[in-house]
Amino acid sequence: MTLVYKICPAASWRDAEAAGRFAGAPVDLADGYIHLSDAGQVRETAARHFAGMDDLVLVAVAAEALGEALRYEPSRGGALFPHLYGVLPLAAVRAVSPLPRGPDGVHRFPESLGA
Image 1: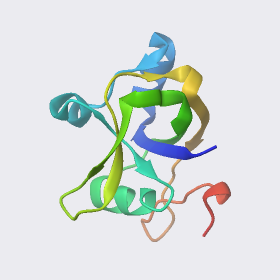
Image 2 (image 1 turned 60 degrees about the horizontal axis):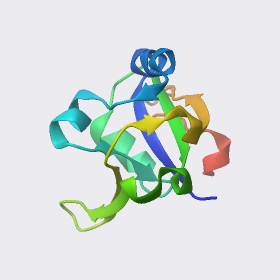
Image 3 (image 1 turned 45 degrees about the vertical axis):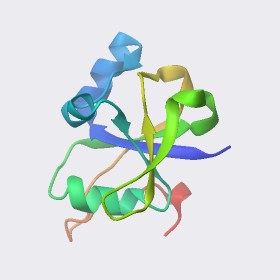
């Protein structure tokens, strides 16, 4: 199973759980798709777009469960990032983990993502 990841504020994720689906963060809604990262990209995503932010969660999603709505598209730097065109069904979620910052200010990822 291939996992892709969404970083979002914990409050937004709680709203998604109450609604039964995640429609996206404001940046996702503005861009027309939900921004995701693969395991090799998620740390850089956190550093670039969530630096200094607390009370975040890391949502692990089964890529295969998203079907054709998931597309890998080039970013500004040319790397292929997963983008979800549509809502994220909670049935595709495999784990939700807190994403705290350490004393150095860098987000600490679950051990399952490796060092």
